[in-house]
Image 1: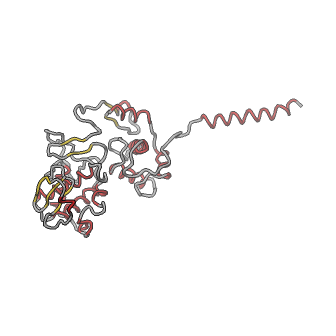
Image 2 (image 1 turned 45 degrees about the vertical axis):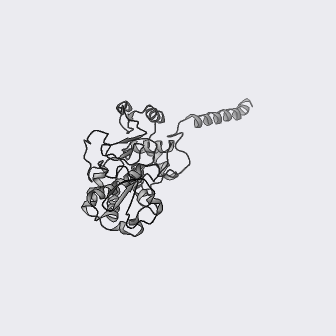
Image 3 (image 1 turned 135 degrees about the vertical axis):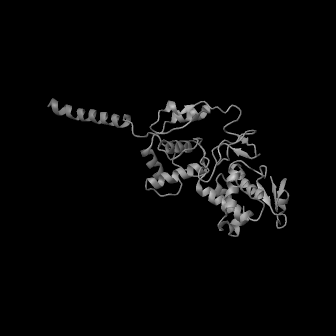
Length: 301
């Protein structure tokens, strides 16, 4: 009789133990991302985690800064392609779940290094103490703007950047179509070349470089989209897009003009706009502060 009375008690104890075990045994990730779909232009903790996880498994090579720029976009697409997911450059629930299963995220390590302004990476299989060091950038804020020796203002907040040449110095790396700076893809170069050719073929070479520089300046400006494609295809931004000349096959001159702009040459001196005074009818563009005229184009702020 006593044994029968104890049996329900034992079952209850067993259930409590199992329940406790289910609560305390850690899963692969106890907390990962928020419910939102992460996409280009997003910033914050979700993007930091996205970049860190993509870097952990070797897809993202850029700076973990919490800004979803072009480099993050292509890293995510490459991950989606490799793992048989829908390739859209969006981090929705399915993509995030697959990424969580394939990677690890040490939130404490990543955020501590960001807060301290350290130079760091987060690659899997490499000891963390070998992936972090104090920043050697003594005179420039990582979050601000710097100006290179060609006069081009570049934003160092995770979007696409120019050559990274600091004021008064010479860029030690000559970027080419086969050796692009972080954040640029071959598709970016092709699209930039198409835009330069469609907008400025027939202009002096300096003027073609200036057109490329304007596009890069817009990418770096908070007033415009932070990707090459976003800037070029912004509604009404470029005549070549409106009339279809963007799809003409560019020549090598246009491509070289793009690479010169990426390497830091900005004949427009930081311009965000340009126009042809012979054809422009907008009173607004005529009212912009003018910087210089190269060929048929006036470049302005």
